Length: 187
View 1: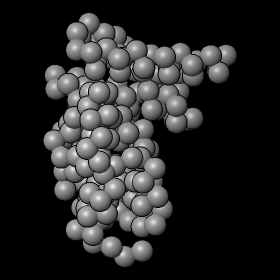
View 2: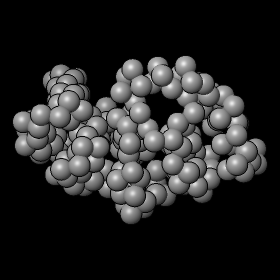
View 3: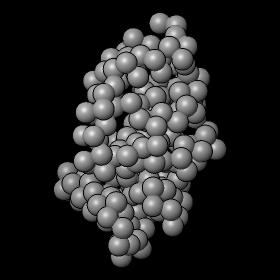
């Protein structure tokens, strides 16, 4: 399916609702630009468009929350550069976009482990959360990761355990839970 960015944005805008935006806000999802589109609509649109990495990157650059979620379904994680990923991470404006990007894209890149360590060391809330979410995602998806990698990850998580920000605390507990589940499977 060949579509343009304006056509996609119009489709997303038409599928959105104020009610959905209010519902997202109740879960502390308050991105700067949002239409209130349900996730199943975004997934169906992605199926119609098909894999399209360049379109995905262009959609991200619109700054619209749902366009960014759609972008995650169109890009090829193996073709994204570290610079592009950093650009995305430093633009996060909700925990939902942060977690989705880590789970669907960043954890599948060849530099995911390096980025997790880098992001955890940041003082910026969503960047640090990205590091923690990435560790959780790697515990779920990286079947080739060694126990040594997870031991190092656990030490990184421990270094930010005292962070009083709610989004960081929740992400740290999520990362630890996923690593514990993985260890339980390995035993």
